[in-house]
Length: 323
Image (tube, rainbow, N blue to C red; front, side):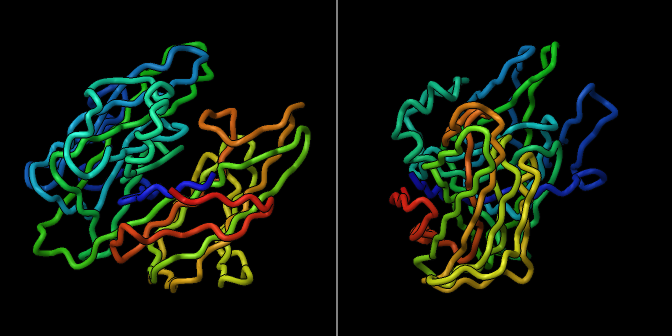
């Protein structure tokens, strides 16, 4: 199916070295982020272990460390290089989620379908060890207090030694009096994927916005069989020329547009995924590294919880409603 997950912040993969509060590699065995000073921001972090030759996918639920509406203007992250993905989500916006705080196997946690429906992703990244993303001056992601955070890390360890898995994020803030605009967005997924055995295979989807938006960021997401991901404008009838192309599935090529891409209601994007499947079996959509995905992420202004890019056409003719 196609699922739209609201997105408040999507990380950019620029190097964070030699930046304020950046990575400190001299005092520990692994890089760390120095947390923002009080009043300048906050830090979210978790650690774990990936045993030799294993794939770990763990989720930790905890309360956001802010007690008032907080305007995040830029973020930086620090994690294991090659992390399959990490995400930070709010489990609803109405206070406590009812999910007990602590560490979970994400496979078990996502067995509750309502969790996905109520989940609001506000940060995501994969692959790169460090990076940061700055919103335009006066533009922020506004995070409410008292929400429960789901911090998710998916890591594959192909080595013969255990690996310490770590995920840190600094959120740098500005005063509410400086806020001029807020962002929103989503990830549109093709959840009906069939990649035939021993073949190269391509699928595309087209979506149109139900409201006028100005797109600040676009990003791609595939798994290890992915060889090409493209995005082209779609005017509601025809797709235009490709303007976004990524051939490295491990890097989502999160791209900022300045000036933003103006997309009126009724127009949107065509995104296309190509995979090379050397296996003797069909590969379908799924959550593990051995399954596949074809997700396009979009961050835009203005802030509107009802704005979404609604799927209207697909290469295989399968249409599903966005959640």
